[in-house]
Every structure is written in C-alpha cells, then in structure tokens.
Image 1 (cartoon, rainbow, N blue to C red):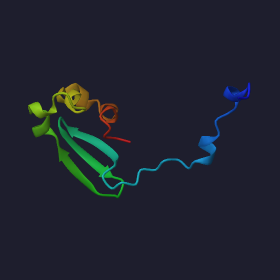
Image 2: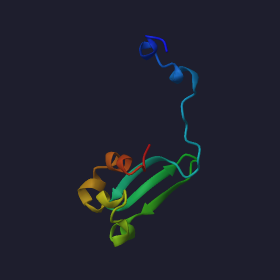
Image 3: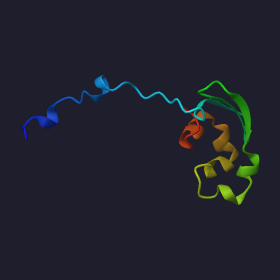
Length: 89
C-alpha cells in the first residue's frame, strides 16, 4: 500500500456521469395545496393531485416515513418535509 493513498483525490465524480432519475414514478416537483393535499409533477411530465388525507388519518401511517406529515405544521412546511419523506427531489 502506498503511504499517500488516503491523500489522493477521489476522481470518481469526474469519471461517472451524474445520476439522473428516469423512473416514471419519481417526483420532480411537489407543492402543498392544503393539509394532506399535494400537487405533484413526475419526471415523465405527468401531473396530478395526491390526496394523502385518508392515509394521514389512518393508523397505517404509524411508523412510516409519512407519520411526521400527520401534523399540519410539518406538511405545511412544504418541500423540507417532503424531502424528509423522500417525496421531492
């Protein structure tokens, strides 16, 4: 092993192209309309409204990434909360 191996720069970022999500279900943009109601645009250009209110009101959400969104303040804080849940890029 070379003595300065740890000091060498990692050139992987220069060699590998950046990751660009291409799966149609990946969310490009999301906007909170009101508590539990989101407008979304997917990477393939599909747009629509998602009504999370039934999910957020049920016990099925407990222990999932969506649980923090049950509180109005978390959902209405917008993109930061959506990113935390993996819903916004």
